[in-house]
Image (cartoon, rainbow, N blue to C red; front, side, top):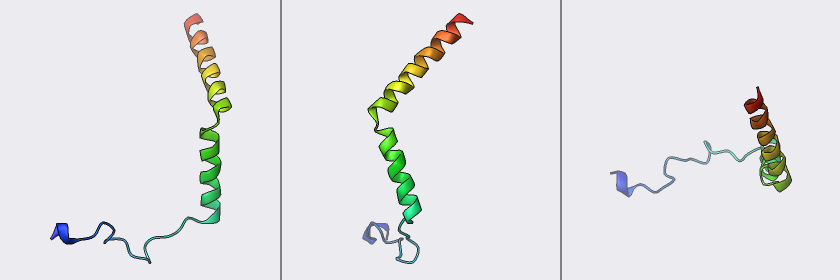
Length: 57
């Protein structure tokens, strides 16, 4: 039955692939930028500016 299967029983070595070098680099770049405190601050500043603009007009 269902319970006797191991957790990764449906995954074969042929079906699973390691990410390519390009994929890994893209992941690392997005991870760095999303954790950047300065980028977050600039995003919040832009958001405040947009809400002010919306209230005016």
